Amino acid sequence: MRVIRRVSLALAAMLITAGACTVGGASAKLNVMTLKGFPAPGTPAKYNKVKVVKQGPKKAKKILLLEPGTSAGATNFRPLGNALVKRLKGWQVWSIERRENLLEDHSKLEAYLKGRATNEQLLHYYLGWILDPEGEPHFQPKTTEETEFAKRWGLRVAVQDIKRVVKRARRGGRKVVLGGHSLGGSIVTAYATWNFNGRPGAKDLAGLVFIDGAGAREPGDLPDADAARAQLDGLAEPSASPFITLVPPFPWAAGVFNAMGSTVALKDPDTRSLMDEFPLLPASLKPPVPATNLAQYAYAVDADTGPDNLKLVQSHIGDLAPSGDPRGWVNGQLGTAQRAAQVFTEIDGMDGTSWYHPLRLSIDAGAVNNGIPAPAQKVYGIKTTMGKRVRLPMYSFDAELGNGRIKRATEALAAQSKVPKKWVRSVVRSSTYAHIDPLSALPAKNDFIKTLVPFLKKRIR
Image (cartoon, rainbow, N blue to C red):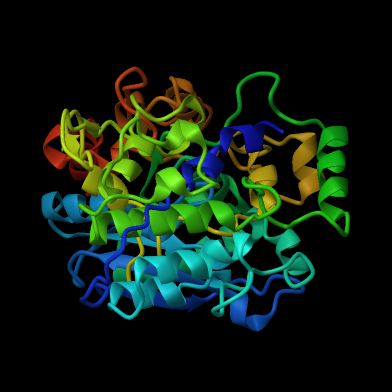
């Protein structure tokens, strides 16, 4: 399926960097709010929750609420959020941590950050046991049998969870702008066009922001009813995993690799990486010379040195140093290796990845159709049918994967809802921005920040 081809985080996750020292110090703390989520059918109550990471002043009257993309988490937006709240007086940035991340085990990552585990222990706990199952206790992945209920975690669940967050955000008359990155952009469209008992979700919002993702497919890509039924039939098979499996047969491996790699890269950046000897790391992700932990990670996620199948997690962040043993990294272009790692790193029991991304959520998102009714929507049971009642200011940013599609989708959504053209701002940087650059680029160089901030100041009053 195209949705899985687009989600090539699998190999991107193969970034674990292992040094040999213990890192002291405690993990930083986040301002996290936990709300009761939608009571999804068959889901244990402990998973009917949604978390929100808050950044900015408590007394803010405007909130930019951000939805992450495929295999991503709320802290994806932490570097971006820090930059935005410094430039937007009276605003907070809230980032949604979807319920699937409650399935993750961050115990050893947190122990590592607090100096209670070495890099080798971290590696063995999450991955080394696959090659050598004997020895110390290790990570116990969730099984298909344990998580059968997650096969129902589609758009309905995600949208209903968002509704609860929006309701809380609007308390006291605050204005809420809903934004999303990658698949999160499709979810933004889904929420805005969702039929809540005859009322579109857009009625609760003050604006929309699309970051290299939107809720409209190119002509010919929309599934028909038969294709939709076939997808659901396949997911219903007892042996089918509820989650996208990017590193067969382990659906959790992509998130684990990336969370570990980014965390070690930041906490132990200058130690020589052991990944050139790690058998699960593809040769395409290994620098041509021995490299530090930070350089190993950066080499794999840089838009110039990383392989083409890693575009989903790439940034423009520099190059290998010209000398050194081990070889380090020289920051350059739009961002830094450190900021790229901050998008995914472990912090306070969370990280920027999703180890268990629900396949049903991505399947459903393929039929949002900019809120125009389509046969597949009835098959999936999604209510994205009020696409002509989204009269809101809209901003869109195309990076490499959007390639102009986000601009077209946003302008089409605005046109069908008769939104004045002056309310719409579309920025296209497809030839110069990788998919993660809007989230990780240095604020002084980040065209996304430079154009979004004045748009919000002007249109959200």
